Length: 309
Figure 1 (cartoon, rainbow, N blue to C red):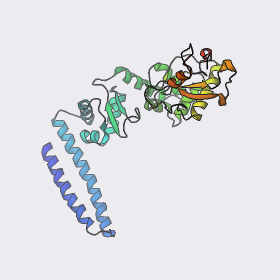
Figure 2 (tube, rainbow, N blue to C red; figure 1 turned 30 degrees about the vertical axis):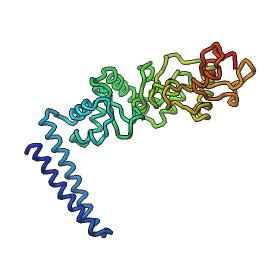
Figure 3 (cartoon, rainbow, N blue to C red; figure 1 turned 90 degrees about the horizontal axis):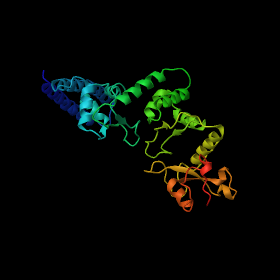
Figure 4 (cartoon, rainbow, N blue to C red; figure 1 turned 180 degrees about the horizontal axis):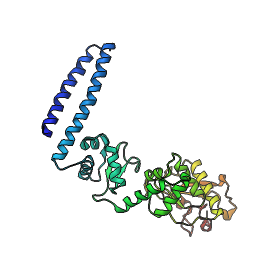
């Protein structure tokens, strides 16, 4: 049987199946006999779904696509840089385990395929191929992630080891969750930052996708800086990670959040929570428009505290 004949046969079966389902509606509301009829019909749908996958796989082979993975890659390349729904990938693959093949393309071969997990700006169940050639460095990074994931110790220790190994490369949340092996890995990222490791997120760098991080350098900061980092997180959380002047947050393009002293230090202001406020870099610059310094987070850079209010 050719692929065309197989697809025609499946289509005929589905038409007959649709007629049976329609006939079942005539007895509404359903009684037990119609419910049983529906269950048997639903079971047949599963059989026909398998037939469809088999017919698709046969057609793929005739067109030189010798595996479900090859068909998925060919379709993603056809729609380069476009969001593609999971149902389409399942359809072209002709196999039930299509999602595993997508992971293999990314993890083992280095194809830069984003999902909603790695880039929350994509819709649920969408994928996007970002480049028409595999990324050898990405494949290497995933291979290293697989090695570190298997190590003993805490999720936090594995994440730190991985960030150090790839620093200063950006790591998306899918790899971080994979390495950590724990659901609470975002909290561990904050703990690492508070312990003095300079962890950069999209709060600090708006070009990063939410959930992506990188380790800026391999030097752990001193205890005094660690306390300031912990307090900074508390102020950002208190203010909902939004600028108190304009309301923008890290989900707005180009926005970086900073902590500002309401009463400047040189006028007697203290580092207590009541004297601290979250501002975006633009509103912060506006408040210090007459300062000779470029504005920075005043908890992280006390040496650059502007000398004018």
